[in-house]
Image 1 (spheres, helix red, strand yellow):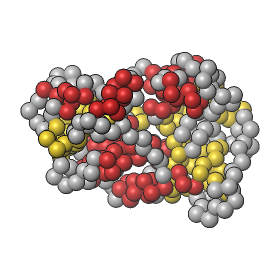
Image 2 (spheres, one colour):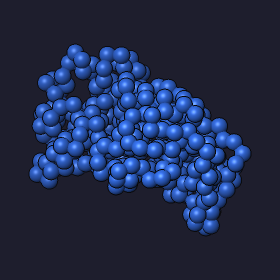
Image 3 (cartoon, rainbow, N blue to C red):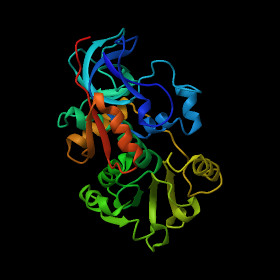
Image 4 (cartoon, rainbow, N blue to C red):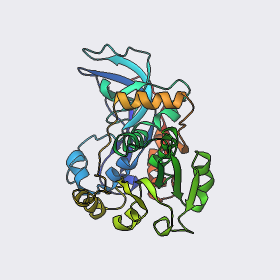
Length: 322
């Protein structure tokens, strides 16, 4: 089968399109014919090999031999492993696995769910990691409820575009922060207010928020907390801000009531089912910036590396007979 193998750490030229062996599902797993995948922050950090902790998973000096990139996917169950009763061949599914930038991939049944019926495979592939992060941040950690005022910093990004819609679905009054070219897109997602950060610094405004989901880390934690209500909560969710910002958030969460802990979102069946309900109800719709064929995945990484991507970047996969 064809797949994208990462051969080193660096820029997009470390991504190699090559033939590899087709995997086999184990106990509690399914083999999926991947129809589409999407790229998230994790893949970008993996390409760079930074922050360094990511290398404990991928390989210290270089990625493990034959390391196939990709996590999110949407596709069709090809075969099932032992003990699997939830799915059968032919089922359309979406979720998370290892090595989704390939024609076939193996997924644990606890990390997938039926694909929302009103989405294409490309749209569904844009959902898992980013939407689960937004859902778990706002619903589970932020306890967002009707009437809350929520600010999403980085509202035009992969997590942000879902966060705006999910916060609205939870009944919040939503303010999105983004650049000039993304203002109309964020407004179209349902944001009640949009702040163009090139013209206005939200940390210096008079508005106060119950929850701030920070996907950017563009301000100090103390400056951001300044625009919270006294019982408000700041949720840090950015690897782009650097390890010092993440560490500062983790430490201050032990002493500052308004400072939420750094959290690790999980892509699990329960969350995917909840997202599926919101999607099929028309309350959440994936936003896609660009789509590339599998053979041009390196170009997709190059586009991410330019820093101008918004929403999700998707890779369309056409499975061939193995």
